[in-house]
Length: 189
Image (cartoon, rainbow, N blue to C red; front, side, top):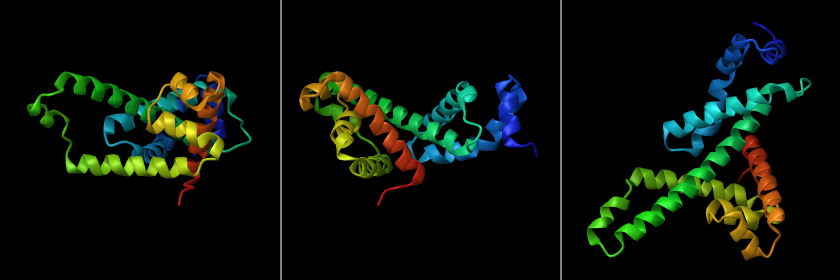
């Protein structure tokens, strides 16, 4: 089997077969890393694909003195967090629209029902995310709760916490980095 560093060099040089081999070697690890965060296979597929796209587009910046797999899994974890936040914000918007559309209509209850299995999965994902957020340094914890759990926009967070907008952006970015590192190492009680 060819050395992974050689594969990376070939991929950087534009060899499509090298990209394919790197994908085949690491796809299962990336899928395993992100699958616990999503209930739908399509979301997992999207995150796996996006993770490889991000990694391959940044491959020329990869530090060849380091191992490739941890670098790739860090990208995958951060991509999963971003995707999860995006899904939560989209669900929140849909719930608001649905609530306004069905307000006062008793027959609308069936539109928002979820199965018991979906409720359990949602609760488990939420609990896992809260465990990780609870382990964050206090500097990032409040901002990340407002961003990832309460699903507030940056401007709303800045206003509620009395912070500058750029401070909120920085803390969210660094909070995501901390979360990604903790998830990568499985650091939660």
